[in-house]
Length: 172
Image (cartoon, rainbow, N blue to C red):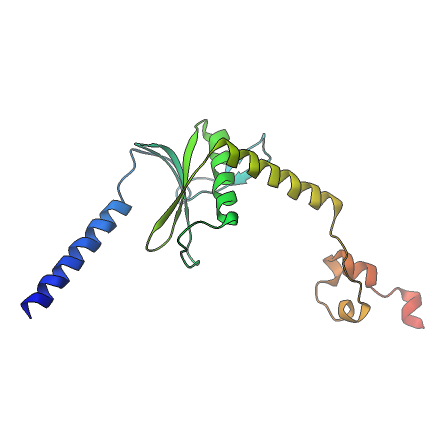
């Protein structure tokens, strides 16, 4: 019984140490989404965002994004890396700082991504491709009047508008 109690105390102390490491207070909080009046705006990049926090820590300025629903992975996904880098770009322009890292905070661990010049360039390239594809409109891969007829999104969908029956075709 004594060994079980000792083991339990050891686990509790290790967990407390890990918890303390995770919530080390930053030197300065530059932005906090819970208390800010609005999002950060980057006019040059035509973006805005609400990172959970932007902190000036011992190792530089970091952005923190909180994942409330996802299952933590061992490494950040490509989408998470682009997201963290986009938040860093917004914070850099809006706050006049250089962000060194982006952190994705899960319930049980933090994933940290170094914000490098290559990641900044990749994110800006992805953003320009996204804007170009939005300007072109959706690619219509299939036009199925049967499917479109019953769809509730037909009024706002380019495919549905093309397949919508005209007054003449509805009369036969």
